[in-house]
Image (cartoon, rainbow, N blue to C red):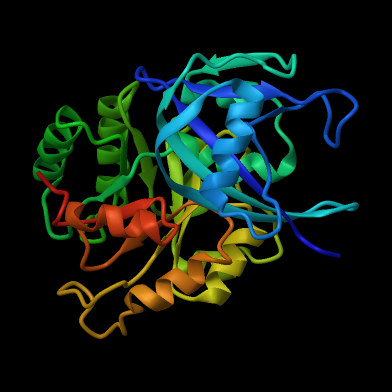
Length: 312
């Protein structure tokens, strides 16, 4: 069965809202919401197909675009490759040129709308920022609290509390304090035993590679709607993350780092190859900072994750 290549757009307004459209009831997955776009013709460049489809469907011409995510999905009756681009500027006024209903939706409310199953990673990618802050080792709870406060004030929207030097009780107390700081401003991701999940309902969970293996075959350990991430280092771990239906991953180490000098770096080419089959938002981690975001986006990553490079 030939995989159908579809170009789709996450169209973002200046205020951050995202444009979605409702599929006609007589089409495949009819009645569900989708990100506008359509089929790439044989020999057609993806960006050209995207521009053509948006002109036909919405009467707009994209002027600023970048790759966001590629998703391969197998339905019972067809296989699709969703080639998704973010459109941050366009000419014209969007309207349902084919009579389809449209809605401008805040990223955090996308979960209120029903999308085809293949669109779940796109919804996640549309909601996630380009930077993922991971807290440094060796700091006291007071230093971590102060640093997280500064990071949130500086615009950090996604952060992981990683503090392997703290005792469990210290970590849990600190997690409660930081959960309060993040409320309404940033998404907090915690690390630790999955038995703690119920104690921190506002936080997401970032699984270690060891936890990925322990949970293999047991299903997703927390309900949809709460962020679940995982640390991955190779194709096998990316596949395990997919089986667990995690929302996003970190892929590391991209380059040599002081914190993990013994780890063999992937390099940009190998990372790009792994991302081709990842099917979910991925942050590159290890020896990268804000200066590498653009390169990361161009090879299909969600962005970059960092410790010292992002710590205020």
